[in-house]
Each structure stands twice: as C-alpha cells, then as structure tokens.
Length: 149
Ligand code: MN
Image (cartoon, rainbow, N blue to C red):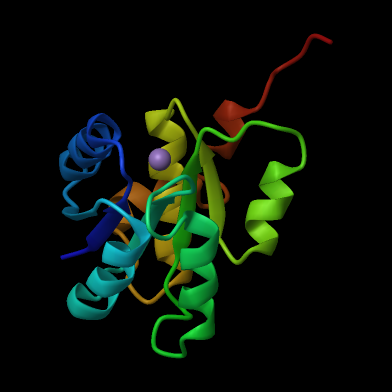
C-alpha cells in the first residue's frame, strides 16, 4: 500500500489530485497547509508528498526546508505542485530541496510519470507492470520520431 500525502490549500485541486491518485491505486492523505503537512508526515509516514508552494501558515518553501532539516523526514520524496511558471522557478524549487516539479494545470500523465520516477528511486517501487514502460528497450523505440525535420 503506497501512501501519498497531498499538501494543498485549494479544495478543488486536492480533489483533482485525490481522484487521479486513487485511480492509480494509491492511498491518499490530505493536508490543507504546510503545518498540517509536517504533522501528517510524522504521524502517517507517507511514501511520497505532493506539495503546493502557496499555502497558509507554512508555505511550500518553508515546509521543504523543515523536511530536509529533519533526519527522520529528509529522505521523503517531495514533488512541488505549483502554478509558478516563471523562468528560473523550476531551478529555484529543485535547489530548495524538492525532488521534482509539476506545474498547474496538472497534466495527469506527467503526474503519474513523476510519481513512478520517485517511487522507483525510493524504498517502495510501484507496481512493476506500470514501471516497465519506462525501462530501456520496452517502448523507447516506438516513441521515437521516425523521420522528418
Ligand atoms: Mn495554494
């Protein structure tokens, strides 16, 4: 059972993420702000955190700093989910300690690809049947453009 914590202050976005993740078989937990997210990470020990940047009480940047400073939490894979779209923000987010970055509006296939990537890296790989697509030699060839400019 893979637990994914969603930290997001917008209820509509939480619901969208929940539907996408439950559709893939993940157990979903929700936090509405950064403080609640930190508390739930300690209590529920999720396998992955999807975290909004703009949140009340503790924003995503403050929350990721506390996560990375805490030896018990430091290894948790954390993906930023944010509407930030300015040039340079991706680098800023990765430098802050996030493992990945997804922009809103969310692209469901980008979301699932990013989750698979991080769960493979961490101690709880996802269903091997779903991971196979990303392994060299399986679908790489058919996805490659066959010609043109
Ligand atoms: Mn927000």
